[in-house]
Image (cartoon, rainbow, N blue to C red; front, side):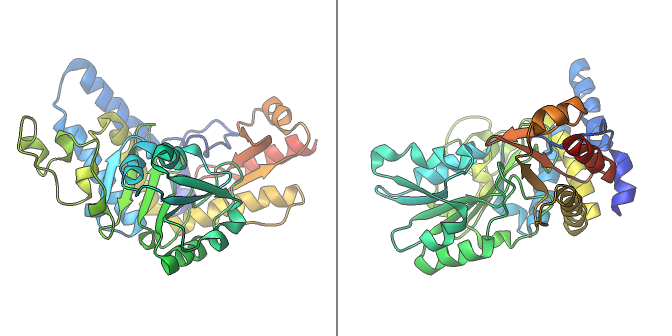
Length: 345
């Protein structure tokens, strides 16, 4: 599907440049959610139909990453998915993170300070070079949420592999518009309510078979069972053999709204989305006299940028004292030009 064919599936009010905060649902996703909510309201159906969306979403997400669906766990938050990874760290472990990393990929390690776990923060551009034999785990975002900086993914992974360190990647700001060899990492976590355009309450984790047997499924419940339908009551413990044992019982309606959005992204293709998003970002950067970049996110310190954009009806965010704009499949050149007109007026 071409971008021009996909864009009519969205109904954004012009000037929405804030996908880094939350993505907008395509009409098929919003309609599916409305139907599910109405069925819930009137008690017309059972939950099994809603759960089919969870299965479809897991499969589509795995396809997007290029990994088997059996290696993907579903939950509601990134930090919740990282909890078992943090708990598996040995006493005295050394964790390396960027100094601007979002806390959902910092706090799950820092809470183990009482066991001697040390979290060391360095600037993103020095991350690969700081990895050494003392490093137990390196955790970083594929794209930084505050600045839009795209991490040197291959370089960081290679440096970690050279010393036997585990690699954990938060790809929340990347999956959906950026291709990487995601299976090269040990753990890839994603909050889906941004670039994957799910309702808030959908998260995924790719858990490599090479490491996940060392994690304890601390949130195990019926949905993590080998057969959830026969795992409602009592012992014995009977968890799934694959990554599903790390599943958390899903917020069904969120996955109902997720499945159609993921399918549209797959139909369009991440390469096309990348070209569209980065192209718009570079059009915006050029209008401000900035050099081109490889990111769909632009952080700018134009004087009074927040007030100027707000006055023009442009919705953006402020991170680190700078205005952050982000461009996704439903963004247009008109959105870019309106934002530039507001900032350069």
